[in-house]
Length: 496
Ligand SMILES: *[C@@H]1O[C@H](CO)[C@@H](O)[C@H](O)[C@H]1NC(C)=O
Ligand SMILES: *[C@@H]1O[C@H](CO)[C@@H](O)[C@H](O)[C@H]1NC(C)=O
Ligand SMILES: *[C@@H]1O[C@H](CO)[C@@H](O)[C@H](O)[C@H]1NC(C)=O
Ligand SMILES: *[C@@H]1O[C@H](CO)[C@@H](O)[C@H](O)[C@H]1NC(C)=O
Ligand SMILES: *[C@@H]1O[C@H](CO)[C@@H](O)[C@H](O)[C@H]1NC(C)=O
Ligand SMILES: *[C@@H]1O[C@H](CO)[C@@H](O)[C@H](O)[C@H]1NC(C)=O
Ligand SMILES: *[C@@H]1O[C@H](CO)[C@@H](O)[C@H](O)[C@H]1NC(C)=O
Ligand SMILES: *[C@@H]1O[C@H](CO)[C@@H](O)[C@H](O)[C@H]1NC(C)=O
Ligand SMILES: *[C@@H]1O[C@H](CO)[C@@H](O)[C@H](O)[C@H]1NC(C)=O
Image (cartoon, rainbow, N blue to C red; front, side, top):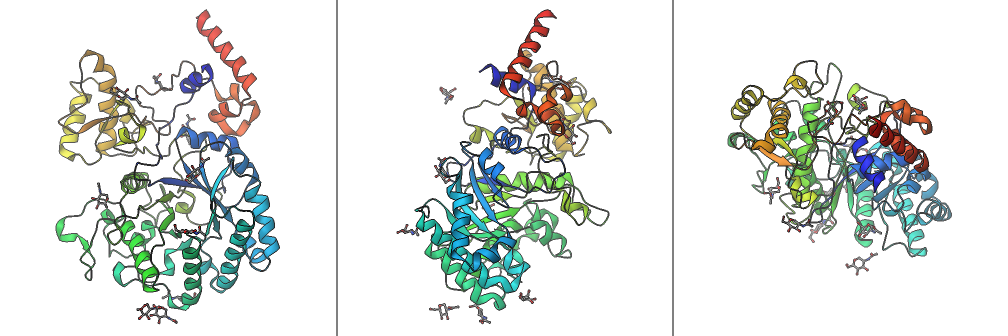
């Protein structure tokens, strides 16, 4: 109890609720590990839990992660790497050994529910199609032999590039040179009640679209009626590029005469920074994309052609993978820094529904509020309202993303926290709302956040167990150490 309380005052995190909704849709996250200061596996799991993340996908079967995820309540997709497929695809005994070492050994305490075989194999290594299918079959047979096939499904994430022309969705079809492999893949998924795994990136759909699609469409923003994206054959309106990519996949599956195979989006996201030639990779766009994506997925509906099929989705990705080769954007898909703070403010808008009964403690601007009204509210809060608006000035921690909605959130909340007890309300002409989610991000700490700097120790004091983990190191301190530390803090406070 005491431990929890003090963790609450020592650590301040954006409360990002990735909980399942009543509709059963979920948003999970991918954990790539090309990170120079990758936290230890237990620290990563603490970050996941802090942010109430319920589903993760690993790119391999790292034993430290699988162990750390045990009894966490988190659903896990483990990965077979592209290199491993070659061995498994030619040898049932290699497949059986893989299952026994990487899956059976951790069940049931680590809730492994899917095995993702390879990463975009059919586009990355087109002639590995046959070996991919046989690897999937051998892995499934090994699961059957261990009586785990009802618990664990096998699938294989594929790139959207497998569908050369994904708009309009109704005419989409898989690259016909892969027909026979994809046919076998779908047959396998159908027979084993598994799902089709799709990696779908509106970021690339937009940047490679040469201006065909507006940015708003890629970011789930509403379009003026003259610019609505409509499939000319079905007359379905597509509110987002994400929806049209998912629907293109359903239509491609249907073109091969399969139905009833759900599509899971195993990767999607938006980079928060990019090089000189990547102007759309910004924190503001990344935030908008992921915020709207979460809201879209958790509403539980499917794409226009499959309204009842929730689009379960994994965001790419947990951390910025700074060690990845390639352009700046390639290293900038992460949602959290390795110290566990958010790269950009991310909230669920209607979080009250997700976090349950909370009345909300923070007052933030509504994402879709009228900009002029927001500007009025912001001016009022910083003027008459006497909010402390210095953190949103240029060069200060809450300046970026430099948007009215972000600045208004900060100012509204500061006003609300100060004036609430004296009768101040969270309204601002209807442009504000209460949320239970701490909107703090990076070094921008919202007033009222439980970070309580008076007890926040310099990282070095906490760091012995894991020097590179910075201020997050509290989770890697052993329990006795922590208790000793807490005792010291309390003593200090009492003496003060
Ligand atoms: C494991 O995940 C499955 C699928 O989400 C869920 O139905 C089941 O309750 C989970 N099991 C445990 C022990 O958490
Ligand atoms: C289809 O796949 C083949 C082989 O993988 C590739 O060479 C070809 O460019 C693809 N076609 C399209 C239209 O993408
Ligand atoms: C692949 O399947 C599509 C859709 O059924 C069909 O139109 C096409 O002719 C097939 N291509 C080959 C090479 O079999
Ligand atoms: C697939 O689902 C059907 C119907 O729900 C069930 O009868 C069948 O046993 C399942 N098969 C596998 C391999 O899970
Ligand atoms: C799909 O089914 C239709 C109708 O039964 C048939 O005409 C068509 O050839 C089938 N297509 C494929 C790719 O099997
Ligand atoms: C859920 O999202 C879809 C796609 O944007 C939209 O058409 C639908 O109206 C939304 N449903 C609810 C209940 O908000
Ligand atoms: C939710 O709030 C209502 C009304 O404030 C209260 O009666 C109820 O006990 C709360 N439920 C939980 C689970 O906290
Ligand atoms: C976490 O790391 C980021 C990036 O290095 C930094 O900007 C931020 O201030 C750090 N937050 C804390 C609480 O250490
Ligand atoms: C959170 O930390 C900031 C900066 O360290 C500090 O100004 C603020 O007062 C703290 N919030 C609380 C509630 O203690």
